Image (cartoon, rainbow, N blue to C red; front, side):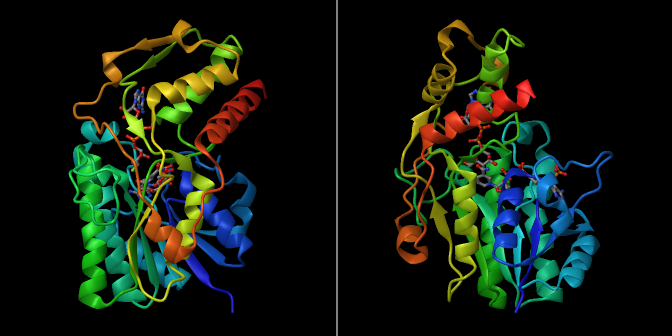
Length: 320
Ligand code: NAP
Ligand code: G4F
């Protein structure tokens, strides 16, 4: 029988890859989309006719209940959030409302309307923040370092709480950074690959950056959405860390991207205090042994391969 899925955050990076995956698997895909003055469709242009869109916003409880009623979902993937860490210091209240309370709004909509639906919450390695152990795994305590991280900790625990209070099938996926050609241009990977392409094509002369020493565990988004789906196919709802098990500095990212385009990064990168954060997450490195063993999840695209893919994509896109 055809399964119904409801995705929030469809226009973002992960929403687009997850929708592709679910359509391939034969799901009927419904998506919550908020009203914008012009449609944001870049990531889903190629599949938009296969998706049923429902207007709504994580901040509007009634619209979420309506979305669950219309979609009658077997699975709900809550990917919507104010997801840019930098912006969370500029709009801390909005970030708390959408990235934190928005999770409760979505859980309540499911509990009241279709409590047997399986629920995925997009939690984040940002919750580990100023890490208290390395590598970070499911049992590592949280120490968030940004309003975004704090909101995600709330979203994580409210998901666990609904599982324990109402016996709902609710899982929290603690995903480390994952990137792709569909990443927003303010995130560091895409900011770098977009700039490399522009510099190579003579459209930009320098790249202004913040902290090059920060270390991240970067994977490919296309691999990570498979883990989201796998979590909802298990017999029991549980939380899982998803990561590559490798960490790289921002400087390594910059070097790989510029070198791939035949450029020396030191000729173009300028450190600008504007991009240095009030509180930094210095090191993220995940241990996803549990996901490998219980979900059978595996990584297909490595860090260097992904960075090169993103540079190639930006070169082609800008040339077009
Ligand atoms: P993204 O590209 O920034 O997409 C965010 C999505 O949320 C967009 O579709 C956006 O819609 C939507 N949205 C924002 N506020 C909303 C609201 N109030 N109501 C309804 N929709 C709203 O994020 P992503 O990289 O795909 O990440 C997906 C989720 O995973 C997020 O929750 C993020 O925090 C989390 N996460 C991401 C990573 C990562 O490395 N990518 C790692 C861990 C966790 P508009 O297009 O209308 O703005
Ligand atoms: O790419 P970023 O903005 O990602 P960040 O802060 O790690 O958050 C991303 O991953 C989280 C998972 O851990 C997600 F939950 C979250 O939604 C988001 O997807 O920054 C990565 C690193 C930071 O240490 C930042 O300080 O790059 C450093 N950086 C240095 N210069 C910069 C820049 N980041 C940005 N965005 N822009 C810069 O110029």
